[in-house]
Length: 215
Image 1 (cartoon, helix red, strand yellow):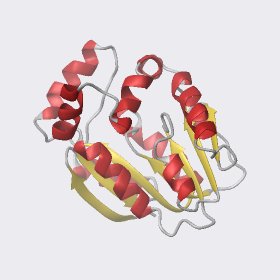
Image 2 (tube, helix red, strand yellow; image 1 turned 180 degrees about the vertical axis):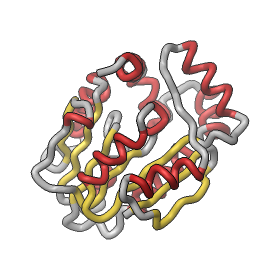
Image 3 (cartoon, helix red, strand yellow; image 1 turned 135 degrees about the vertical axis):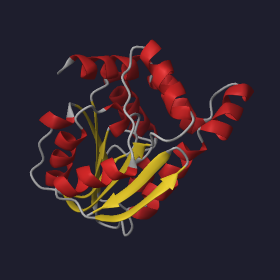
């Protein structure tokens, strides 16, 4: 694991509860207002991901960089036969396993604390999700090669746009916090996907993100 990966893992290990609160709304009124105004696209990407994974009945799903499992649980509830979440931040996986027990979904949702480049599967997954992951990946092409090998039907990915007013502010904020972050142009996203063997079926802007469905 290189230095940047160590910094990213440390950042998310220590911020697991704060990050999860974006989805639960367990924040102060000011915090909730901030999320509604500036992070609405995080809720929208969840909605779009669930729609992109249809039909779900009997399908398998891999969520890479799953955090506390907030994408995994609705996928299981909507009919996915098997959902695997991987993340290399231990606190995220601990939270995901606890929530799976609380939601009675531990039989459908399995979580592993592992670097995705070291993750092995006996067979590809019908759907592979990499939402909010490429923000923190320096070598995006290497990761895409790995995801392609794990994908049977479709991969759903997001990429933070380089052309938004918030990009430089986010860069400064996360750099101060010791966490590297990377941004993308549409051309760069398309080039990476083409070179790694993906075919883009849908790419559009969602707030400060590019939302991508690739086969």
